[in-house]
Length: 260
Ligand code: ADP
Image 1: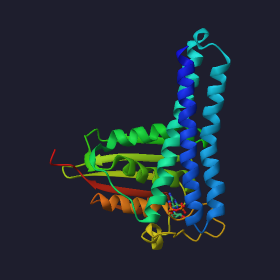
Image 2 (image 1 turned 90 degrees about the vertical axis):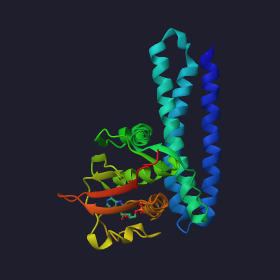
Image 3 (image 1 turned 60 degrees about the horizontal axis):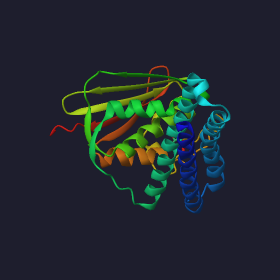
């Protein structure tokens, strides 16, 4: 039936994403001084959505979907979510590799920051569920269209949210507020925050806050460097401050596309 075609398509997508991820891993392996860490972290991050999508597809293949349309829809939705997540992850890895290579090209278009952010949060939903994180989103409802590169802007926001997942507690807040000339995207968490002495240093390549035994989180110190690069490529900026109570907040400011 049509399910089989769909399943075949999903399997193709999965293996395509995996080949892409593998090529990226190899490249990163050659470039990165922290290669062992990178491989073990990334392979976990990439394996989980692939495994979950595979389970869903195998379950679908085992029964005739027409018998149970609800189950069919649930499995397809699950596989779809995981593939979205994989796409987000692969884009992120590729961007970091390209930036290291010094060849990050922006492709400018009209980007609606609100729907872009909502799409990203949807793609990250399986990750939030798995890590038992609660993400709250609010926006002032204004249209916030910028002249920008959607993939890299999404990558920027992805890195900040990913850090909130790594270094924060259970709650993340994402807010979008605009005026006539610019839009501000704020992402805050309920973790330990960042000592103010390091609030600028964290954007430097390979810099990680010396934490002793405060947090044992793996990383390379590349994500925020990429985030800053992307914000500045859009004539915007990114800054960090701590919120009352201690969590870290990141504020990304982007000029609005006033011409259109
Ligand atoms: P990575 O997370 O891979 O180390 P990043 O460039 O994304 O690299 O972040 C640099 C450093 O900034 C991190 O190592 C961490 O010490 C600190 N940091 C980033 N985001 C947060 C956050 N939300 N809360 C606390 N510390 C953070």
